[in-house]
Length: 190
Image (cartoon, rainbow, N blue to C red; front, side, top):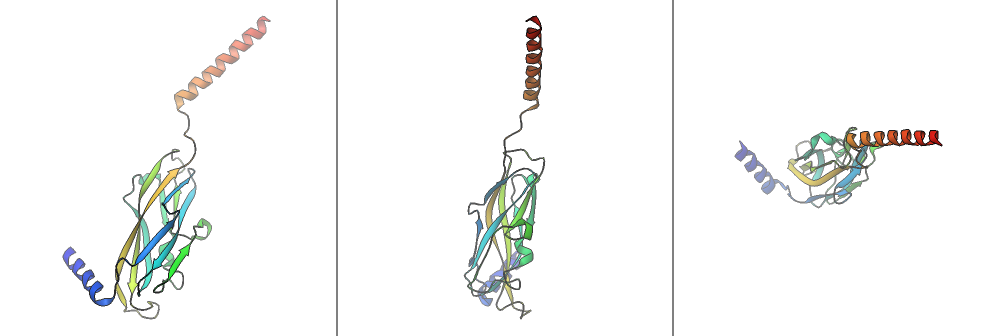
């Protein structure tokens, strides 16, 4: 089955105009590293450059190969849009979009878990799936020429200072209590 799928994709690439490797996605920030407080929403903007003569529609994006999937939850923003105009990116065109959580704009959003510890990191790959068409798919329903994925690295770090350990808090409270008792005792002697 896998051999048939690979053969089919190679056939589509050879005969039908799919130009693999002709789409690039640059995310903002360019190194893919973002940070935010526990319980906050962070995300990425992007620029998608289509240097092929095919029309493209973004199908979806998701996180793969995560180092700490429990750190938060990813929401795909680019997939539901598909493209900047009528859900497609025209041949030899670019699409760029800044991240804006309130309007579901950008590549996607990452909701950092509220109990996440400061300094915790989740990193991996944002996998963006693309569909290619020989003509505008809004006008031609049989012009699909294949699919491709573009992977970009990401990293999310929980910002803030680490909370003190419970042992430290106990010692601090005891120290304050003893200091208060000693001061009261000295004041009564005076």
